[in-house]
Image 1 (cartoon, rainbow, N blue to C red):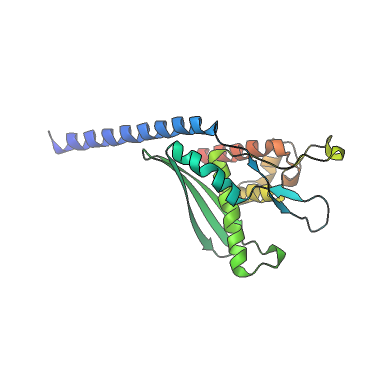
Image 2: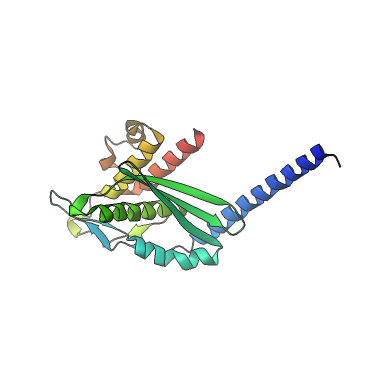
Length: 211
């Protein structure tokens, strides 16, 4: 067999192995997602101007809930983190045992709220990035306490953290915030309905893949 033919054969085998690994990844992910739990929201953010606080799922709770399920279906979830100027970049990597992996990147400002010291500020942003990159990769959902009866007729909007996640994705992609708002029929990110949050992420994912 000539060297050129051997090289083509090796390339074909590599492409086939890559395609098979991706198919196995998607099949296992599809089976696993039905088993992933809804995460309780035990964390809270008190808005500085008063009003009702916003709840969110703690990274510790997410990690404890998903680790045994990831292992059962042959997945591992790891993270790369580094700092660029005033931003913390957290990359979540979901890897399958047969070799295929997917990534989700979060760019976050250093969280200096609440009189945090520099180490606490970096830790808070890193934890935030882990929560939302994991949620993006696994399509996780979380749930807080039921709303009071007075709020039953209101359409809940995305939380401050979810708004920051969308803003970080828009900044990373250098995308126009107003176009996303027009698509979701709102005037600003704060007005996006909670039920449309996953839809907004899907729109940004599709735009990123198309670019």
